[in-house]
Length: 180
Length: 119
Image (cartoon, rainbow over all chains, first blue to last red; front, side, top):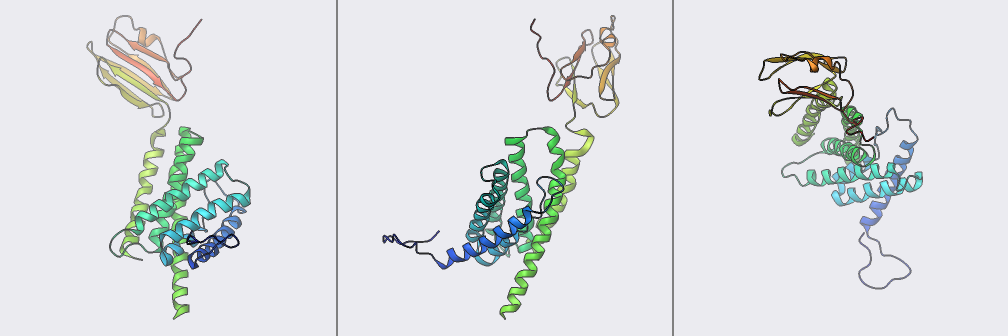
């Protein structure tokens, strides 16, 4: 993450403005992530994923690199704080995050007007669920009955992706009108 | 909402019925029965759907029935009717055949009970 430019500086790491922004936004995402972990879930794998609001907003405002950092830091720190680091939960969370970051990377390089927050959010949510399920199925529980869950999980992903996307859309509009 | 957003949402919505059809129809992953005639490529049928299947062999038509997750030969144009007498097959790995009419039937499942017996 940015940082030193070659001079030995044992006492402090030089940080950039980008680093601070990433740290602040990641902290926000981690807080949402942990608050959400307290909510009961109707089915393992289904949760609103509101922390992704931060990721998508960062993607729209600051670009893909910032969004990717926030997402990975959230998965790492969220798991350390919740005590799930390196457990299957963490693996699933990480695989979902990687899938959605990769998808967002491709989507943000699309020529033309490109996607807005709603499109990004839906794509990210679907990719997250697909990546997570693929790992759950091929690595952890390779049972055909599990495949019956795919449509339900993807429906939930679409709904929560839409909701998060709309939240980001409204949030960015508020920020824009607050600044002018 | 940009045009790309609308396309993304429409594609995502359109994907869902495809997923429901693919993963939920006819107990797609339930056990299946494999029916083969001679050297023809085998046909697979789900045991979850009750039906009668007519297989055309060198002697004539063998009739098979799938009912309540089981399968049997109802009739076959052979002399000994060994296939008909073998009755219902319901477990993965079980098989029977009508050799004169060159029709073989085997149940395919996730965990076949035996594929060999060692005494």
